[in-house]
Length: 446
Ligand SMILES: CC(C)(COP(=O)(O)OP(=O)(O)OC[C@H]1O[C@@H](n2cnc3c(N)ncnc32)[C@H](O)[C@@H]1OP(=O)(O)O)[C@@H](O)C(=O)NCCC(=O)NCCS
Image 1 (spheres, protein in one colour):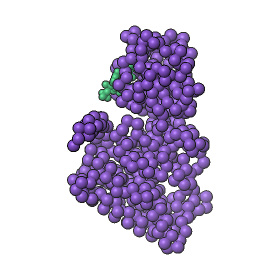
Image 2 (cartoon, helix red, strand yellow):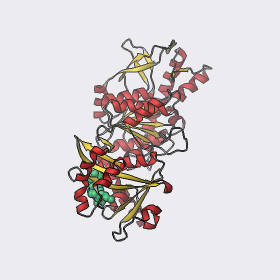
Image 3 (cartoon, helix red, strand yellow):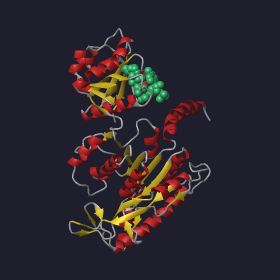
Image 4 (cartoon, protein in one colour):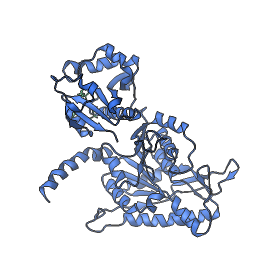
């Protein structure tokens, strides 16, 4: 092993450690679109999931099979029929779904059974267990359309799944469920994954999909991906969107993420399977990828109003006194209250940060980032940063910058890079205090 490798590998591996500790003993429900398997991603996905499981995460894997069922139908000369964005499962389609599910299960089990030396699966012993964990009910008739053998999840055998996970096995579910009369129903992967995540009160629900995530501006396909979508904003967005008919429609996965969050799953994700290692990137790196829908009720991050000014002043005052933050007048904070984002617990403000945009330079300053000494090191600083990033992206900014004298490393760890004061937008340069010698750090927004 060369020295260069030591130098890069050791700090890199250590930087992942906090995420390994954080997710240990978490429950993860992963919904893999059938398209991912059709695109030949199964081997790498199995390797990544085996690695994640070996780091103490309990995994329920739900596979989709839309393209595989359509292929079977095509071979039988039968047309795939949809309505309301759902498959109409007649007798032929049910046969095709059963064949496709059987074939996929076999392929997935085979992928988890690899163990050749010098591959990421060497030494991995992943036990994959499937079972009749889902009770289904028929979709029935909708607007005069009979969905026949298409079903919806009625009940999840939480105890059975949990017991299987406790044994150290990975649970594999196909989008099938059975009625108490023994009838089989074709379900959707998204419904099964969401229902299981809610029933288990999983820590995360992750969809691996054809789409890269939810765009900041849904109407503009060139706009960036919204990395963090608060539940309230996600609901508003969904209400404004047309009912989805294709998995590539913005509302398609969004509706399930919202349902999961409303059902008590803290975070649900829409990730692109086209990015190799998407699951690893999302779980074990700071920035993650794709879109995460998060229930911010839990965290009470919100934009400030005039009523919050006293709380903000009380929070930042000690840091102004010891020179960590630049002094701001109360009137200035009152004037700029709308620029502030705060974290509030039970009516007390425990954190704040402000965004001052410089639209002409397509950047914005994050100022006055403060977390109360009583609640530091619980991730509130990071939550404020994420919210400021989201606000900046919504305003069309391409980067945010900070001026700091003492907190440089905190920002560098979160994707900021140091630049010279000359980098600052002209209007900000004029106000720069050259005596204070603050370092300027910039973070590009993807
Ligand atoms: C910087 C600050 C906002 C971070 O808030 P937080 O809620 O504690 O942050 P998080 O929980 O997201 O992150 C905590 C991590 O940052 C580290 N950290 C805290 N202050 C740091 C600093 N000045 N430099 C480097 N790392 C720091 C903590 O040790 C902790 O590391 P760990 O997770 O390895 O234990 C908070 O410490 C603060 O208010 N500091 C005083 C005001 C300030 O410096 N603001 C920035 C002005 S530019």
